[in-house]
Amino acid sequence: MEKVIIQKILFNYFDGRATSMERKLIEDWMKKDPENENLFYQYLDEWESQNPQYLSEDTEAWENYKALLNAQPKPFEKPEEANHAVKYPSVRTLRKFWYVAATLAVLVTASMFFFQKSILYHTYHTHYAQTKQVKLSDGTLVVLNANTRLQVPRWGFYGKKRKVLLDGEGEFKVTHTKNNQRFVIQTNTDFEVEVFGTQFVFMHASRPGKWC
Image (tube, rainbow, N blue to C red):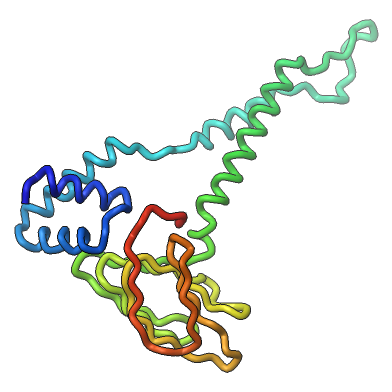
């Protein structure tokens, strides 16, 4: 396979845009020659250098905020002399204070948004030529095919639905519950499949999605 073609396919995979056929093609290509695995990671480094990830400067913002607080005059401090007027923070200082406070608020809000899935869900992941069997808290058995990601609630299933998130291919043997909880499989494109208790294979091609 031409290097230009495999590079294009790998870049699509790293972007999350590879089709099922392309993923299978990459899997066979890596098995064919051990040197292809080295080339895989070489292209991965090249892709990451062209697609830098955003890193928030939350540590620096927090240090600036603490330094600003320490620099504020005490609001009820008496003047040393009766004729001296009480000094209040300048407009510029107040602007800096609110700027730092707003920055911290944005950082906290963004962190909660981007990492809420990591907090609420536990992730199971398989790589190339790897399968994995997972037993859920309700007794449901899931066999994950290669290059698949499954996210399940960390603290079990509650309410009327048992909801999991799947990107890839998995075989589900769903356990029927006494309270007839529906079992819902959701993809990163918000497509959902609902069952009560049965055995089936579900496959979803990876696409750029909303998952964290």
